[in-house]
Amino acid sequence: MRGMRVAMLVVALEAVAALFLVGSAWAQHGNGTYSESNSMASDGADKLYVLYCGQGHTEGQERWSPGVFVGKPIDISDNCYLIHDNASGYFLWDTGISDYVASMPNGWQNGPLLWTRTKTLASQLAALHVDPSDIKLIGISHTHPDHIGNAELFPQTKIIMGKAEAAMYFGPKGFVQPTPGDPRPTFSKDHPLIKADEDYDAFGDGNIIVLATPGHTPGHQSALVHLKKTGWIILTGDAVHLQGNWDNRRVPAMGGEPDDVGIMIRKLQTLTSMQRLADLISFYHAQLWINHEMTQSAKRKMSPEFYE
Ligand SMILES: [Zn+2]
Image (cartoon, rainbow, N blue to C red; front, side, top):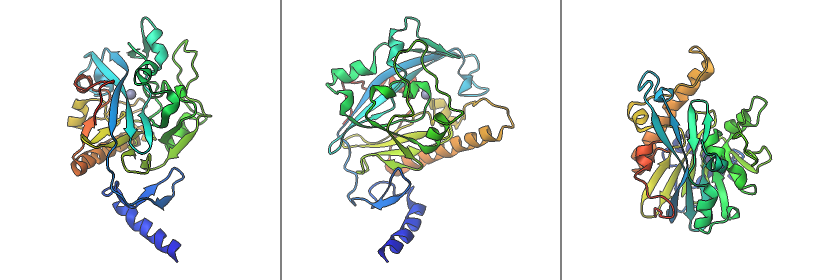
């Protein structure tokens, strides 16, 4: 009886889940099931560190703004975010470009993008006296090299990734792109994973919700973080790359042919995901932290300083 009642409730709750994501009595788990979770409201994580995870340069930003700013060079930031959740410990969002790039004198020219790193993720964690084994969970936005470069610095830590992203990256047509000369293992199919097919409440307390924001890649994710003093922050991953793209709802070029249905669907998903983030911003009065927007990153307090 109770099982049936729960099932009916789940159907009803799914319809309003987007609006009452946090603090509701339901949480989705990686296996796609729902269960009753604590009914407390999210009380906020205590610290968020912004870690420098590399930077990129390209001679033309039209890859992100087709037809606009053609041939105009741009520098982009690449950050990782370390969150300390009072009850549950450390959570890392994205792992940046490989630490190995810090040892490459000319950086890594990967197609039109030149990646450089002035300091490693490992050294920034060490400066905080955080051992890689202290990280309880990792969330990744997607599987491009500027986000998964150091996944295997944490071989024991479960990584929350989109189910569709895992199917793509670890599938037969997977596109693993190691840094040239990098002796470190790239993100391995043997890594312990949590494959999320919808939003995922990382620690079950509503303080860090990994959001399904497909488009840029099939299983792309963003993160909604609640901090005690600062309030709500959305970490975009690459759901949006630049402030101008956000303001104008620009969708990046994605390669492929103009009539490629797969590309068209991903562009539509990108727009839908941007609108979803806009709705969450309104609902939670959240800040939007655009990972690759250098002008935003330049204003951030960087680790060892932190947000509370
Ligand atoms: Zn990126």
